[in-house]
Image (cartoon, rainbow, N blue to C red; front, side, top):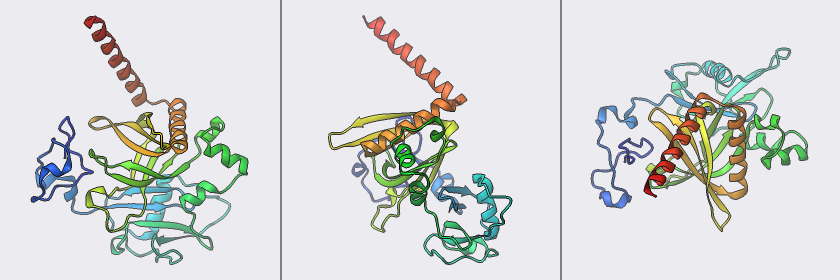
Length: 292
């Protein structure tokens, strides 16, 4: 599959040779050298690690030939996870699907048949993103934070928005995800999917640096109470976007949070995008004037 500008969409895998192209509902396709297709990488060195504070990160490792204790160190370093220097905590790492069963810290990552892990403080329980979002602070503080209001300081606090639908491809395949937003990045993490999910509908974890985000817009407010929205980001091929839908109150909170972060943390990418939008508006006004 390719978009209207001829860019191949890597989220949509190669078609089966026997499939009729009419079944997919679009007319633009890309022909790629099989040797460089993004789905034909020799190995996937990405791992998702949930940290003790309930946040998670996705690491792209140069190799999986590292010990699990090194993975813990890399995870803490990447997220700038803060530990109390006056207290010496110990941490275990577990597979996501086997809670309470620590992995030997000397075990080599490549020998483990999963890419999702939890780092857990010794003698503590896992803290999932859901628990992190709902714990700590008074009821007033939590309700204020979840409503999308709050103070300027609240804007930088990590928030998790659960059960949001993302459109994964041009033909709008829907996949349920969680969205984590902080002052540094927007993270998309797919919910567990059953085996009946079509291969082209599977969504990988994704992370977008906030300095690359340039806009967030509400697209549609349906009478059913479901809203659709997107965020726009700068990529290697210009401006790109991700589109979602969810209940209106959740969409409004996400839109408010991203918009506030953009207004507080301006970036060169945002400035270039605003200039681009202004020039586009001027061209439209000039064209309209010439028509008259």
